[in-house]
Image (cartoon, rainbow, N blue to C red; front, side):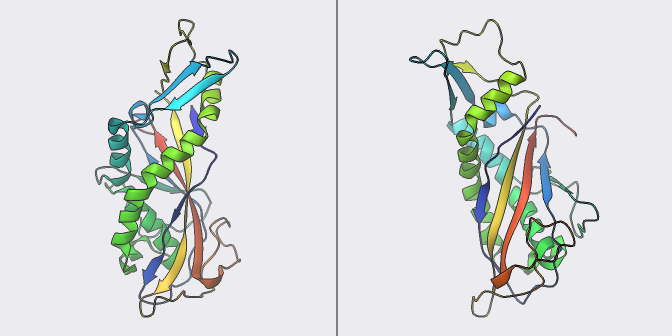
Length: 239
């Protein structure tokens, strides 16, 4: 089953370009990573509350092992993040499908698509290394925090999926089994387009709000963008 973490993971990072961007495409995107061991990445436990028997304590038990697993998901170049669009008629020029890339690179491709209309144009960002470093350093904690805030909702989905066993003694801490579970987060990339010459914000009518459908006409002022990307972690090896 799938669980949508209904809390935005906001990533703030400005991008610096050599010149004003061309017309962009206003779309929503989804990034999917298969064969994820969610039990290692998100070690969750539940236990009956010691005071209120009708309450359950759900805990996200971060550890060196889980932190390392999350860092590997986000930063490792060994992962093949599949990119797809959520709207018909979407332009995805330059997306390098089926290759191993870090999540930061895929996110930068999405920004380049929105700004320049071509994913390969991420090379035009002068601070692309800083962008990727920021993703690697910030995103793991932001994802953990988002899930931790919604851990009780996750437990509700866990119960509805009939994963509580008769032999479970809830007086003791019990590990949640996230096998065959999928996790979905919305990573909202926000920032400003700045020129290389004087680091001033470029104002352009070629940028569209990320929440609009393809072909939307509303523009962003001051070169500010807000691009929502659905990041999906799947335990299955394929869709």
